[in-house]
Each structure stands twice: as C-alpha cells, then as structure tokens.
Amino acid sequence: MITIGVVDTMFARFDMGGAALEEFATCPGYGETFTVLRRTVPGFKDLAVAAKRMIEVDGASIVIACGMPGSAPVDKQCAHEAAQGIMQAQLMTSTPILEVFVHEDEADDDAVLATVFENRTKDHARNAYWMLFDPEQLVARAGQGVRQGFGHAGPLTTT
Image (cartoon, rainbow, N blue to C red; front, side, top):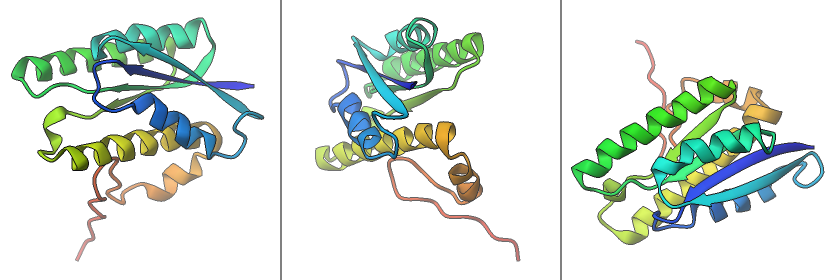
C-alpha cells in the first residue's frame, strides 16, 4: 500500500487538507492501492519538517504541503523561507513535496479566494496522484499553460 502525505496548517483560512482528502477519495485505487495520511501544523514554516517526517517515519511516497501566507510583506518573506525549507526537505529525502500555497491577497473577494484555495489544493492533489500512478497525464499537459487555482493560461504557438 502506497502512502500519500498531506500536511496543512491551522493558519490557512480554508481547510486545504480536507479539500486534498476529498480529491484523493475520487482517485482510482483510493483505499486499495494507496492511503492518505494527514497532519496539521500551526503555520507554513512548520510544513517542511512535518513533510520530511511523513516521508522518513510514515513512508509517504509523495507529500503535498498546503499553507496560506498572509498579505503583509513579512508574510511573503516567511513564505519564501518556508518554500526554501520544503525544497531542502525534498532534496534531503529524494521525494517530491508539492508546495501548495495560496496567498491571502490573491483575491480581494472572499468567495473568489475560497475558490482559489479549493481549486489549487484539489489540482495539486490530482497532480500528486498522477505523479505516482499516471505520469503520462502530466506529459499530456506539458506546455499547455495549465494553472492550479485560477483559469489556465493556455499554450503559446509559433507563427
């Protein structure tokens, strides 16, 4: 049985871990080929260690790390530092950790922001699934301007 890890934060204004679990539950093999383990930490600076522990202690084959940086400049700096920690944890474990951050100022309207949270989290959960079980799905989307959260940008074409 393969384990997929989901680590999220209390600080986020949306239940990102719950959205990831909902998406994984719709994937073929859920409960038969793979299980999902969820951990919640206080803030996004805690994600890297929690993800690394999921890999090293719990045997996760991939982890999605979900968090919400606030809108203040210090929050953006802390998000950068948290992202660096996540990248370092990936390198130390040779295991993918997909960073799923939604910045609080990505939308002024709370309903739009909630949609971005839900879409980005579920899209990355599906990406994690495809990375493990169906990587050709990702290859098919290469160069297509696929975004997680907002609408797709679309591909560029040559003249």
